[in-house]
Image (cartoon, rainbow, N blue to C red; front, side):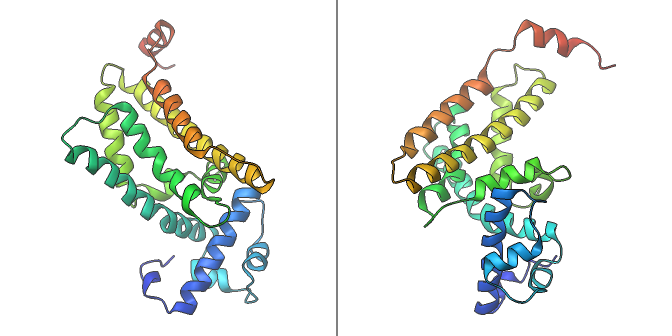
Length: 231
Protein backbone atom coordinates (compact mmCIF):
# COMPACT_ATOMS: atom_id res chain seq x y z
CA UNK A 1 0.00 0.00 0.00
CA UNK A 2 1.29 3.46 -0.86
CA UNK A 3 0.31 6.24 1.55
CA UNK A 4 3.49 8.34 1.47
CA UNK A 5 2.33 10.63 -1.33
CA UNK A 6 -1.33 10.78 -0.29
CA UNK A 7 -1.04 14.36 0.97
CA UNK A 8 0.53 15.40 -2.35
CA UNK A 9 -2.24 13.87 -4.44
CA UNK A 10 -4.38 16.18 -6.64
CA UNK A 11 -7.45 17.61 -4.85
CA UNK A 12 -9.90 15.42 -6.78
CA UNK A 13 -7.92 12.29 -5.97
CA UNK A 14 -7.62 13.28 -2.31
CA UNK A 15 -11.38 13.93 -2.15
CA UNK A 16 -12.09 10.48 -3.56
CA UNK A 17 -9.77 8.88 -0.99
CA UNK A 18 -11.53 10.66 1.86
CA UNK A 19 -14.97 9.68 0.54
CA UNK A 20 -13.89 6.04 0.35
CA UNK A 21 -12.32 6.09 3.82
CA UNK A 22 -15.34 7.82 5.36
CA UNK A 23 -17.71 5.31 3.78
CA UNK A 24 -15.59 2.32 4.78
CA UNK A 25 -15.15 3.57 8.35
CA UNK A 26 -18.92 3.87 8.81
CA UNK A 27 -19.73 0.50 7.26
CA UNK A 28 -16.93 -1.30 9.11
CA UNK A 29 -18.14 0.28 12.36
CA UNK A 30 -21.75 -0.80 11.86
CA UNK A 31 -21.33 -4.18 10.15
CA UNK A 32 -17.82 -5.40 10.99
CA UNK A 33 -14.61 -5.58 9.00
CA UNK A 34 -15.63 -8.73 7.16
CA UNK A 35 -19.35 -7.99 7.03
CA UNK A 36 -19.33 -5.85 3.90
CA UNK A 37 -18.08 -6.08 0.34
CA UNK A 38 -16.03 -3.60 -1.66
CA UNK A 39 -19.16 -2.94 -3.66
CA UNK A 40 -20.95 -1.77 -0.51
CA UNK A 41 -18.16 0.71 0.18
CA UNK A 42 -18.19 2.05 -3.38
CA UNK A 43 -21.96 2.58 -3.33
CA UNK A 44 -21.77 4.28 0.09
CA UNK A 45 -19.04 6.59 -1.22
CA UNK A 46 -20.93 7.35 -4.44
CA UNK A 47 -18.15 5.93 -6.62
CA UNK A 48 -18.81 4.13 -9.91
CA UNK A 49 -15.27 2.98 -10.65
CA UNK A 50 -15.09 -0.56 -9.29
CA UNK A 51 -11.28 -0.47 -9.20
CA UNK A 52 -11.16 2.69 -7.05
CA UNK A 53 -10.49 0.85 -3.79
CA UNK A 54 -7.69 -1.21 -5.25
CA UNK A 55 -6.20 1.85 -6.94
CA UNK A 56 -6.13 3.95 -3.76
CA UNK A 57 -5.48 1.34 -1.06
CA UNK A 58 -4.48 -1.95 -2.66
CA UNK A 59 -6.00 -4.39 -0.17
CA UNK A 60 -8.61 -4.27 2.57
CA UNK A 61 -5.83 -4.08 5.15
CA UNK A 62 -4.38 -1.19 3.16
CA UNK A 63 -7.73 0.58 3.43
CA UNK A 64 -7.89 -0.07 7.19
CA UNK A 65 -4.37 1.22 7.70
CA UNK A 66 -5.13 4.36 5.68
CA UNK A 67 -8.18 5.10 7.86
CA UNK A 68 -6.09 4.61 10.99
CA UNK A 69 -3.34 6.90 9.71
CA UNK A 70 -5.88 9.54 8.69
CA UNK A 71 -7.64 9.50 12.06
CA UNK A 72 -4.86 8.57 14.46
CA UNK A 73 -2.21 11.07 13.37
CA UNK A 74 -4.08 14.11 14.82
CA UNK A 75 -5.13 12.03 17.84
CA UNK A 76 -1.49 11.17 18.49
CA UNK A 77 -0.49 14.84 18.18
CA UNK A 78 -3.23 15.86 20.63
CA UNK A 79 -2.13 13.14 23.09
CA UNK A 80 1.49 14.28 23.01
CA UNK A 81 0.35 17.89 23.49
CA UNK A 82 -1.60 16.96 26.64
CA UNK A 83 1.47 15.25 28.12
CA UNK A 84 3.72 18.16 27.12
CA UNK A 85 1.37 20.67 28.77
CA UNK A 86 1.53 18.95 32.16
CA UNK A 87 5.28 18.49 31.96
CA UNK A 88 5.74 22.16 30.99
CA UNK A 89 3.76 23.16 34.06
CA UNK A 90 6.38 21.31 36.10
CA UNK A 91 3.99 18.89 37.81
CA UNK A 92 4.00 15.13 37.89
CA UNK A 93 1.34 13.44 35.83
CA UNK A 94 -1.11 11.58 38.04
CA UNK A 95 -2.61 8.29 36.92
CA UNK A 96 -5.81 10.20 36.12
CA UNK A 97 -3.81 12.62 33.95
CA UNK A 98 -2.39 9.67 32.03
CA UNK A 99 -5.78 8.01 31.55
CA UNK A 100 -7.17 11.38 30.42
CA UNK A 101 -4.36 11.65 27.85
CA UNK A 102 -5.53 8.36 26.36
CA UNK A 103 -9.27 9.01 26.41
CA UNK A 104 -9.67 12.72 25.64
CA UNK A 105 -8.05 12.59 22.17
CA UNK A 106 -10.27 9.64 21.22
CA UNK A 107 -13.32 11.63 22.28
CA UNK A 108 -12.34 14.81 20.43
CA UNK A 109 -13.84 13.67 17.08
CA UNK A 110 -17.06 12.77 18.92
CA UNK A 111 -17.17 16.33 20.22
CA UNK A 112 -16.09 18.27 17.13
CA UNK A 113 -16.87 16.26 13.99
CA UNK A 114 -19.84 17.46 12.00
CA UNK A 115 -22.40 14.69 11.84
CA UNK A 116 -22.11 11.29 13.47
CA UNK A 117 -18.66 9.99 14.38
CA UNK A 118 -17.92 6.28 13.78
CA UNK A 119 -14.18 6.09 14.41
CA UNK A 120 -14.25 4.44 17.84
CA UNK A 121 -16.79 1.85 16.71
CA UNK A 122 -14.46 1.22 13.77
CA UNK A 123 -11.68 0.49 16.29
CA UNK A 124 -13.95 -2.01 18.03
CA UNK A 125 -14.63 -3.67 14.68
CA UNK A 126 -10.89 -4.16 14.16
CA UNK A 127 -10.49 -5.72 17.60
CA UNK A 128 -13.41 -8.05 16.91
CA UNK A 129 -11.93 -9.18 13.62
CA UNK A 130 -10.40 -12.67 14.03
CA UNK A 131 -7.14 -11.86 12.22
CA UNK A 132 -6.51 -8.18 13.02
CA UNK A 133 -5.56 -5.94 15.95
CA UNK A 134 -5.21 -2.18 16.25
CA UNK A 135 -1.68 -2.59 17.59
CA UNK A 136 -0.74 -4.69 14.59
CA UNK A 137 -1.54 -1.77 12.28
CA UNK A 138 -0.22 1.12 14.38
CA UNK A 139 2.83 -0.10 16.29
CA UNK A 140 5.78 2.21 15.70
CA UNK A 141 3.87 4.53 13.36
CA UNK A 142 1.52 7.00 15.07
CA UNK A 143 1.59 5.67 18.61
CA UNK A 144 4.31 7.82 20.20
CA UNK A 145 1.77 9.35 22.59
CA UNK A 146 0.53 5.97 23.76
CA UNK A 147 4.11 4.77 24.20
CA UNK A 148 4.87 7.78 26.41
CA UNK A 149 1.72 7.23 28.47
CA UNK A 150 2.41 3.53 28.88
CA UNK A 151 5.97 4.14 30.06
CA UNK A 152 4.78 6.66 32.66
CA UNK A 153 1.99 4.35 33.81
CA UNK A 154 4.42 1.45 34.02
CA UNK A 155 6.65 3.45 36.37
CA UNK A 156 3.72 4.31 38.64
CA UNK A 157 2.67 0.67 38.82
CA UNK A 158 6.14 -0.71 39.49
CA UNK A 159 4.87 -2.27 42.74
CA UNK A 160 2.97 -4.78 40.58
CA UNK A 161 4.67 -7.70 38.86
CA UNK A 162 5.49 -7.21 35.14
CA UNK A 163 3.04 -9.93 34.11
CA UNK A 164 0.18 -8.33 36.06
CA UNK A 165 1.00 -4.91 34.58
CA UNK A 166 1.04 -6.27 31.03
CA UNK A 167 -2.30 -7.96 31.52
CA UNK A 168 -3.83 -4.85 33.05
CA UNK A 169 -2.59 -2.69 30.19
CA UNK A 170 -4.23 -5.04 27.70
CA UNK A 171 -7.51 -5.03 29.62
CA UNK A 172 -7.35 -1.25 30.02
CA UNK A 173 -6.93 -0.80 26.27
CA UNK A 174 -10.04 -2.90 25.65
CA UNK A 175 -11.98 -1.06 28.36
CA UNK A 176 -11.13 2.32 26.84
CA UNK A 177 -11.78 1.24 23.23
CA UNK A 178 -15.17 -0.26 24.03
CA UNK A 179 -16.02 2.48 26.55
CA UNK A 180 -15.46 5.36 24.13
CA UNK A 181 -17.29 3.45 21.40
CA UNK A 182 -20.23 3.08 23.78
CA UNK A 183 -20.22 6.83 24.43
CA UNK A 184 -20.16 7.40 20.68
CA UNK A 185 -23.09 5.01 20.14
CA UNK A 186 -25.28 6.33 22.95
CA UNK A 187 -24.67 9.95 21.95
CA UNK A 188 -25.56 9.16 18.34
CA UNK A 189 -28.76 7.40 19.38
CA UNK A 190 -29.85 10.09 21.82
CA UNK A 191 -29.24 13.02 19.48
CA UNK A 192 -30.86 11.21 16.55
CA UNK A 193 -34.06 10.88 18.59
CA UNK A 194 -33.93 14.55 19.55
CA UNK A 195 -32.70 13.92 23.08
CA UNK A 196 -29.71 15.26 24.94
CA UNK A 197 -26.48 13.65 26.04
CA UNK A 198 -24.03 14.93 28.65
CA UNK A 199 -20.81 14.13 26.82
CA UNK A 200 -18.49 15.73 29.38
CA UNK A 201 -19.97 13.71 32.23
CA UNK A 202 -19.71 10.48 30.26
CA UNK A 203 -16.06 11.13 29.39
CA UNK A 204 -15.08 12.10 32.94
CA UNK A 205 -16.94 9.11 34.35
CA UNK A 206 -15.08 6.77 31.99
CA UNK A 207 -11.78 8.36 33.04
CA UNK A 208 -12.70 7.76 36.71
CA UNK A 209 -13.62 4.14 36.03
CA UNK A 210 -10.44 3.38 34.08
CA UNK A 211 -8.25 5.08 36.68
CA UNK A 212 -9.83 3.01 39.43
CA UNK A 213 -9.46 -0.18 37.40
CA UNK A 214 -5.75 0.20 36.61
CA UNK A 215 -4.93 1.20 40.20
CA UNK A 216 -7.04 -1.52 41.83
CA UNK A 217 -5.12 -3.42 44.53
CA UNK A 218 -3.69 -6.77 43.46
CA UNK A 219 -5.55 -9.46 45.38
CA UNK A 220 -3.93 -12.37 47.20
CA UNK A 221 -5.49 -14.69 44.61
CA UNK A 222 -3.79 -12.91 41.70
CA UNK A 223 -0.50 -12.73 43.60
CA UNK A 224 -0.60 -16.47 44.25
CA UNK A 225 -1.48 -17.29 40.65
CA UNK A 226 1.27 -15.00 39.40
CA UNK A 227 3.81 -16.85 41.54
CA UNK A 228 2.79 -20.23 40.10
CA UNK A 229 4.81 -21.36 37.06
CA UNK A 230 3.00 -21.70 33.75
CA UNK A 231 2.29 -25.35 32.81
